[in-house]
Image (cartoon, rainbow, N blue to C red):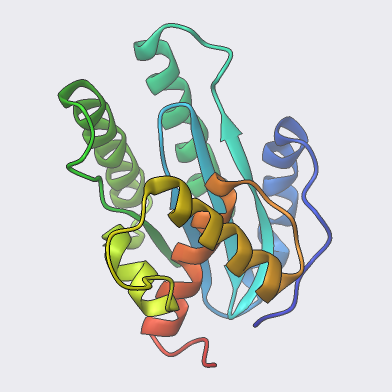
Length: 188
């Protein structure tokens, strides 16, 4: 796996520091932003070449109104894309296992991410959960329950990078690693 930087600072500081670190991020090879998006907590991972450099979670949990939460998350993701100026963004395809209300909200959020990429002239890819898990060897026969998938992602990150993160951040890192492997930027 790639080299690991120090753990990221708290979210507010992280967003402010992104502008400061954008110059350093520019000179590291291919810059990749990976997202595991939801309207409440979106995990993110920034890679310079094959190296994981920053990771964390954007959180709108305190906002009770779903529309305000959606707008806040879209704004935070747009800010992150604009400030870090990645060469490529990858994120998870929405799952059809959700309720219609959740599916609609996630589709809107996915559209917001795509719009931010279009505005900033950044290419993107969308990975189905089964695709990125297969690339990383995290599908072990049969249908695992959602909680089991989360545990596997957390273990993959802990074993590969030596860091302890929650499931949202772990899945963002996994999505990024899967993309790096599928494009041969990262090899075993």
